[in-house]
Amino acid sequence: MKDHIISSSCILLSALLVLVFTPRDRIRDANVVFLFKQVITWLFGLMVVQFRLIEYPIREFPYATKASFAFEYFIFPSMCVIFVLRFPERKSRLHKLGWYLFWPTWLTIVEQIIRLHTNLVQYLHWNWFLTWITLLASFFISHLYYKWFVRKGVPSRSL
Image (cartoon, rainbow, N blue to C red; front, side):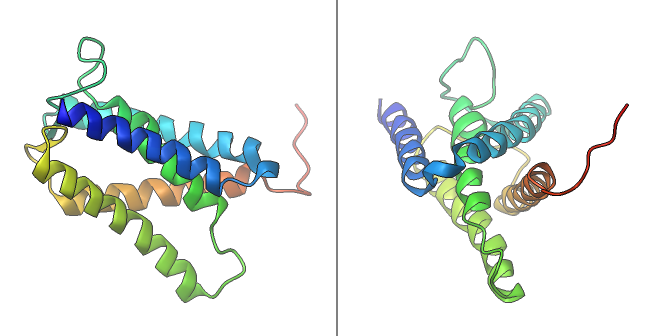
């Protein structure tokens, strides 16, 4: 029961953070980032579980998938929305680097706390550094995709 409460709390907190930190005029942008990040994390999450690198003993949909719906399909994409929409585009390179390092670091710390104190995540052939690297890479790819998607003034090619 404790694990379900923690999982539900993480989902609610993620939703609240997205609502608070997404500007009203950028809701469509948030949808683009959220859906793109879902594709990355869902597919990669399924592969990680299929190859028995990570196990999620307690899941939202245990008969549908062995992956964690909460983490892969909602929490990580929600955090990516905030990462991308609040990215410090007009700041120094050092500030941007700090932004890129901060997000995977704090999410990895949270995952480690959850892993150590609940049955929501178990590492079989995985470690915190792999989590950190995959988060960094997926946030980077999502940010690149978003910048490409919203690029203005570039004519589209006709068929």
